[in-house]
Length: 177
Figure (cartoon, rainbow, N blue to C red):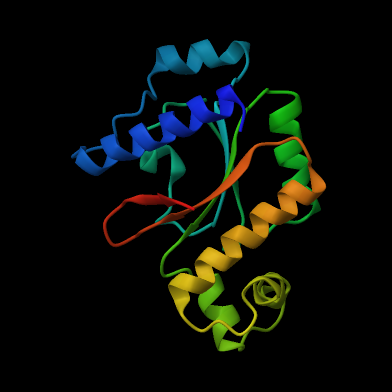
């Protein structure tokens, strides 16, 4: 991992510590911050995460507007649009670190485990099943799914620093894998 990516990771860890102690979201969303961002964005990290409404990276990492480039898709699965978004953030915005952020009690992972999905949901769960195999423990399956996405990104976008993490809904902590 390069120095800029290491610094980004440390910022994320410190941000999560702040989040765990904060009674309210403390990120800067002020009119002044919005005005400053009109000139462009320079997010210090890319976060690929689930669409789950309980998983809000800007809050989880105590980030300000413009700090994170967030990509959301149920089950934090990787596809061509996701890869294109990560590539854009890394190359054009110079974001030094990509984090695949899964979470506990993930509905998409649960659907993949139960083997009951249909329709377009099945396109997501098929990818998750490929990642988790026959794992039935939801936490272990979420970790396997995250690590699979990390490997897909590394395999398709060499040179990008990427790590996996799991957000614990139960206590708000982020576990970096």
